[in-house]
Length: 195
Image 1 (tube, rainbow, N blue to C red):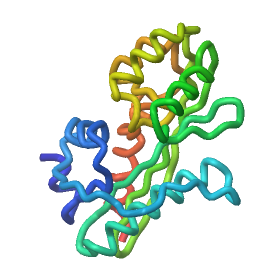
Image 2 (cartoon, one colour; image 1 turned 90 degrees about the vertical axis):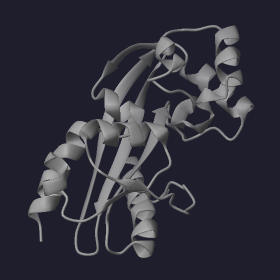
Image 3 (tube, rainbow, N blue to C red; image 1 turned 180 degrees about the vertical axis):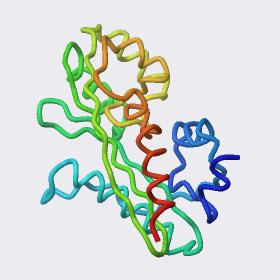
C-alpha cells in the first residue's frame, strides 16, 4: 500500500475521535490510536491559528513521550463565531447556546494539525467558512438531546444530522470534520522527505 512505503515508522493517531479514525482509514494509512492526556486549552497569548496548531502539538508530544518510536498525527478543531471561540460544549445547555448563536450566521472552522516524531515536526492549520440556515429552537433541542453533537466543536457535526443546519461552505469540508486530509496528504509527503 502507498502509505506503508511512505510512513517508515508505526503511525499513531493521537485522538479517540471516530471521525478522525474514519478519515485516516479513508486515506489508507495503517495506524493505531492513543488518547492524549492533556487539557485542551487555547493559549490566549497566541493567534487562534497558532494556538490551535500548538494544541495539536501538545497532544502529539504527550503521545510521543509514551511512544518515542512512532510517528504521531494529531489535530484539534475550533469554531469561531462573532469573536467567540467554541470548543466542545460542556453540557447540553452549552450546546443549545452555541447552536442558537450560530443560527443564520457564518462562522469559521479552524483545524490545527501536527505531525511529530523523535526527530521532526510539521504543524499546519486550515480554515473553512460555514454558513448556517436560520433554524428553530425545536430542531436545536432535538439535535442536542440525541447527544450526537456533545463531543464536537461548535456542537455540531457536518457529517451527521448537523448537515441539515449547513447552508453552504467555503473551503475544505474535511477541515470541518476535524482532519483536512488533502493538506495532511501533502504534509505527510514532506514529512517523509525530511530527515
